[in-house]
Amino acid sequence: MRKLLLAAALVLMLCPLAAQAVEMNLVYDEIYHYYNEPDVFIELDGRPVATKEMPPVILMDRTLVPVREVFESLGASVTWINETGQTKISYNGTEVLFTTGSRSVYLGRSKISIPDGDPAPMIINDKTMVPVRIVANLLGYDVEWDDARRTVKLSEASAYVYGGSTSTTQPQQPAQTQQTQQTQPAAESAVSAISVEKHGAADLVYLTYAKPVKPSVARYNTPERVVLDFPGAVYAGGAVQGSGTIVKDVRAANHDGMARIVLDVDKQPNIEIYRAENGIVIVATAASGKYATNIGDLTDGAVFSPDSIPVSEPPKDDSSSGGGSGGAVELDTSGTVDTTTTKEFDYNTVVIDAGHGGSDPGAMGGNVRESAITLAISEKVIAKLRAAGYTVIATRTSDDVKPTLQQRAEIANQKRGGKLPAIFVSIHCNSFENPDSNGTQVYYDPDSKYGTILAENIYNANLAATGLKAGQIHDGSHLYVVRTTLQPAALVETAFISNSSDRAYLTSEAGQEAFASGITEGIIKTIDRMKADKGL
Image (cartoon, rainbow, N blue to C red; front, top):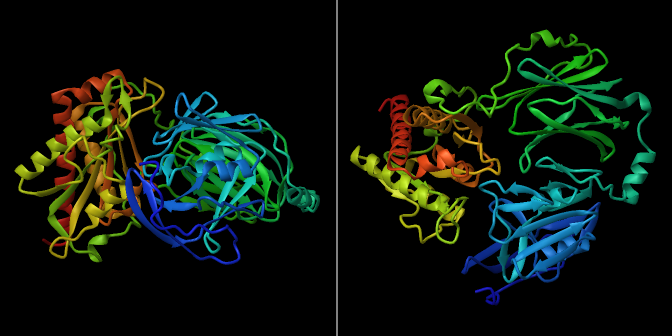
């Protein structure tokens, strides 16, 4: 199928002056997919990057670009390794290695996992296409999306940290950046020092800053980070002192004529910003469910006191196994959206999605395929729900098929009798390069009232049913099937297939029954709550 020709294609030179539609057939996964979207442009430090053979395309809300055309034009070397079927991109001493269809990307010897919901590198129309943000970040580029111009803007960073590995080679600064640095604001508006301290349940990031102003705060995943831009200020340089638990690393640079501070985090924390004695302090605390951002008065407000932070330590991810219901959570649903007021749901219908399948086995633990485990647990959930009188729609019923993420969402979003299925649950197994990682996790949309309640109910029921380690419950709004399904949704990472103990439990009849019981209980409890709140 890799030799299939385009049935129809309009491939344009990239020119940001006139956005037109790209209409073509995309051939991937041995299927023709009709594509008709406005042009997407690529810029490097304001200069257009042209692709002649294959245009960038947007799939799963992510921009994929032809790897050779784009990254060779940026000065990288792209090599196809025939023996292993891998592609290697080399730039300024940094090497990125990936296999099409695989969700694992290697930065040197460090293994990076592409988040579920983001596309893996893939062959489209005989061209190797990669998600531009992930690969560009690993090579040391900052990536921004200009929605008004539908443009991916790349700029070289002095160093970029991803998954604990740093590209320490300093790329040459383009002329535009050099000119910006020559016209920096006066030193009195400079961030002159950065230090990180642990205090109780918080990490404190102090910025020595003579005339602080309110920064803009943005949050990103792949990797997880919080980005703060300080207008009217520059970063004067110098090493970051200290380290924290929630904030894994702090990077600083000058970007677009202002100071940019990047906090690398494991998962998005609460961020509060206050006036400090000689500048400002960024207070990062672990979020329980939905995270929050709060910026106080940085000019006339009271000076921050660390004594206001709780003295208890934040929960650690490496706690011993055997949490049982002791790790139960109660999530805050204030400020969330109640879709039952705007959508009609069939409270007797549920969609169960067994993750992966077909050519995509998911994570592997020894010779155990994630796709086989998720299907087995899903079948048990379906049987329990049907026995309780529910109509259940399965996105797949065989390990020989692989619905795309879009198809899974389309199945969930299809109305039946004018109503949507009430609940969508996607079932997965977790995996991590550290074989000691274990426990159960649930992802959800923190803006969804009943999605939040669903995640809480499934998570707590799973802990009680399995007795496994209390893991984490996370913001999963970046996951495609959580973000695009119209009903309350949750993605369940049952346990770690990469952990021998968890894997033995996942492959056992008792373990699968326990997970099925917990997931079923969480679904029914949520539907009962939805009906009660509607007065049904």
